[in-house]
Amino acid sequence: MNLYRSLLWWLALAALGALGWTWFSQDLGDVVVRFRGLTYTTTLAYFVIGWALLWFALWALAWLLRLPIHAWRRHARQLARNRLATGLEALHQGRWQRAETLLLKSAEEPLLRTPALIGARRAADGRGDVEAAARHQAALLAQDPLAAALEQATRLAANQRHEDVLAALAPFANPPPAALLLQARALSGAGRAHEAQAQLNVLRREQALSAEGLAALEIELSAAALAQSPQADGLVQRWNALPQRLQHAPAVVAAFAIRSAQLGLEDIGAEAVAEALDAQWNETVVAIYGRLPAGRDPQRLARAEAWLAAHSASPGLLVTLGQLCVVQKLWGKAEDFLHRALAQGAGAEAWELLGHAWTAQNDSARATIAYANALRVAREEAPLALTGRSLREQIADEAVPELRNEHGIPLLPP
Image 1 (cartoon, helix red, strand yellow):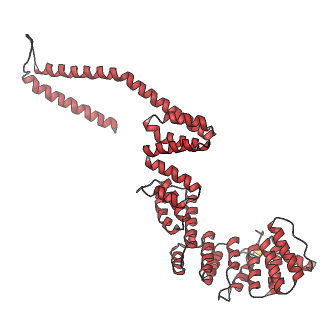
Image 2: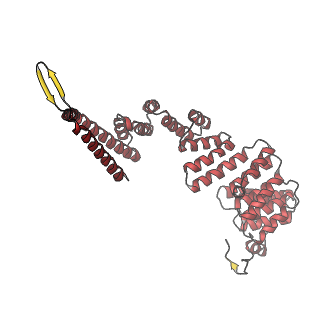
């Protein structure tokens, strides 16, 4: 395309020259120059050509005179680029002093000043020179306020100073994607995650994160927005506004259930957890189902028992069943579920619940052992032996019903 345009341009110039020569050839005209008694006579065409050649000669002379200056400037720019590259490599290797020296020299080139000062600031931080880091930050602020604010906000975010991060980035109307990401995380940390959710579309359009990273951030912000809901009505509205894929995400449904219980909506939270478990099983979420306050739903235990058919070896489900039985004072069932949970790998929580069950039945001896085992397991120590369980009961605790798929073929245990 460029060759075609150049050809058209030269053809146009040739046509214009031909027309000019045709016009001049009819009457070449006369040009008379008199200076201090000398008279020089020529045609207008030759005068124009001579004038053009004179200007070309003057331009060529000026170009030749400036050639050493241009060569020196090119050499200086190349030297600055080499220093920048070497300085960044030294910064990556942890050679702070060498990196800072090279980067400060490369900062003398205006086009490289911003990245060089950023690197010099990081090198000064690396060697612990607070005064030098402050000087480089001030120079960066004078050179590029946005880059300086972004650098400062990154450091503030590492120290969890969320309000300061927002204040540093507030003056800029159209911040880059890195600043938007910092703002989103700072808003979430400052208790304003619902505001950060509005930035997800911009981050997605700018491709600030990978698809997996953006999905994780969306789950993180959604869970934080639910956990930070001040009132029950707002919590329910935010929950209903979420798409189903987020309502089934373990972190999101866990945040909703816990906050629901805090605001007196434990039945709604339990229903949300149950729906999420029906869609996608998760050990953490099923544990929350048992920890929620009792509420007014009489079917919670029955619904949890229905999950045993597909998840009989789930320690989280067995602990949840034991907890629900303890709440309803079904001591025998609670003991059976909790012993099975321990046989399947449950930890300190199962031992603690066993202690509660035996304490309620005035069995202080076994309760003491259970509480002691809860502490020992939490410290990653071996639990004490528990008497009173027959061999048949121990075998029953470890037994897992055979699992089959929809075609009746046995499945391996998860």
